[in-house]
Each structure stands twice: as structure tokens, then as C-alpha cells.
Length: 341
View 1 (cartoon, one colour):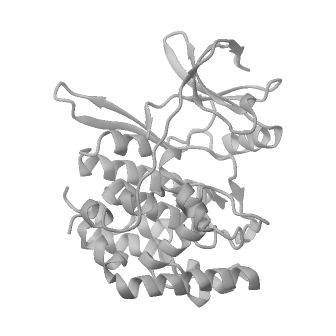
View 2 (view 1 turned 90 degrees about the vertical axis):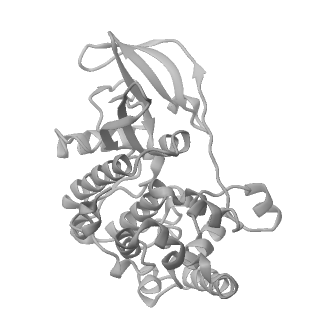
């Protein structure tokens, strides 16, 4: 059964949105370059001063982002540590007085690209995923955890021939607002979940025990999305959930336990919180009841549409047990990358 056909017979649906508002001003970067402000690419909900804008300088396009001082300082640290990276979108200019970072402009995000071009060839999708994997490998190689790996943080450029066929030319992983350097491999512990609920790992939903393995779970979901399984992942109907007293996090946790298996001991031990362990067990038990009636919801069933090697690789990334997930080095040496497309 094709992925989109199976997904439409489950209670899960899709979500998409975009905003664009015209503004006008200029800013001078540390380099002395003058940038002319254009469209708003992303509007911050609480503080419009933190919005992301497209800017022009000469004949080139850039993006600038006004950020709080802690993130500004974090960005300087990251840019110094990953200087010259082609896979991580670091800022290329800044304005310290206004807390503005200037980034290269990309035509699209992976989220929008797949939504706008559902027939994008598999070879181009694999190219994007490969480069994202290399970006994660760079981060993990220096003990950084991204914590917010998702399709709308993956930036893509492409060229297009006369027939409208796209060829991906450049890919970068961006948005390091909540990136964390794990000194000595220590997990990140926060009193609340961070990152996007739809793409978090099970432990990420709790805010406890977040490690490099958490990035791997998110990357596994990104692979599913890029390969055609987005209808299983994107959550809609927030108002209906709220009427039923269900939070998005509860719904997503239950889905993930439906897809990838029940909450294992390794997950509970890593979270190490009685309250959260009880919540995880509750979502896991609910998922098992659902799967008993709908066994086709297991990823081992519907993931077969992706091919046996893709199924094998992604299953290792989305293991609910963070201590048993495959590492980025293991993923990048998987046989799937060598498969003909």
C-alpha cells in the first residue's frame, strides 16, 4: 500500500504555513557592507524585533536575524569553531550593536521543497539527506548537539532546466538557537522540552537526557519525511486535540510509540524522572492498544515502501531506546547510500 494511501486511512494529517510581509530599512554589517531590508521570512510570535528578514546587498541576497545577546554570543562561538564549514549555515556578517546576524540566502527549506515539488527525484532527496548527515557529523564530531533537526531548518539551493527538473546544488543545516556543547558526553537537562514537538525524540519531549542520539531520532524522522512519509509525521487538527484534552506532545509521543515500538527500559533510565517515566509508559501503553487493532501502523510495515535498506537504516535511527540508536558515523556508512536510484 503506498505511503500516502495508508496515511490517509490513519487519524494523522498534514500542516503547512508561510508568511511574507514587506518592510524597508538598511543595516551596516561589521564588514562595512550595507544591506537593504526586504521581506519578512519568519515572524517571531512574542517579539517582532526578532523576526528574520531577506536583505539585498549589491546583486546578492542574504538573510538577517535579530537575536538575543546569549544567542549572538553562541553564534560567534559556533562560527569560530566551524569556520569554513559548507554543511552548517553559519553567519557571514554581523552588527553587534543591534544584535543582528547575516546569513547566506537559500531558495527554500526542505519542508517547503517537498511540499511544493512532491515529484522531486529520489536522487536529489538522497543528496539533501546525505549533506544533512554530514552536517550532523561535523557537529557531533566536536560534541555539539543541534537539538532542533527538522525539515524547515534544512536550507536548499537548486538549479532548474527547461523541463522544470531540479538539481540540488547546495544544502546546509541551520538554526543553532538551542544548540548545546556536551562536555564529556553529558546529556542536556532542561525543565521543559526544547525544539519542535513534531520532530523531537521521545526523551526530547521530556527535556531530560538529550544527547547526540536525540539528533539521530530527529534525523530519522527527517529521512522519513524526505522519502515520502510526511503524512505520518505532520500534525494538524490542534483545536480538535485541545477539545479532547490532548496536547500535541501527547499525540506525537503516542504516534511514535505506535510506529517505532513501546517505551524501552533504556529510554526510561535515561529520562530518570518518575513523573516523566509514568507519562512515557502511559503513552506507550496507549500506542500498544492502538497497534493491536492497527498493526499496519508499525514502521516495519509501512516503511517497507521505502525499500529494505532505507527501512533498516531509519529503524536504527528511530529506535525508542536512545542508548541503542545508530550513530551518525554508522548511518553515513550504511549500504542505502550506495543503492542505485
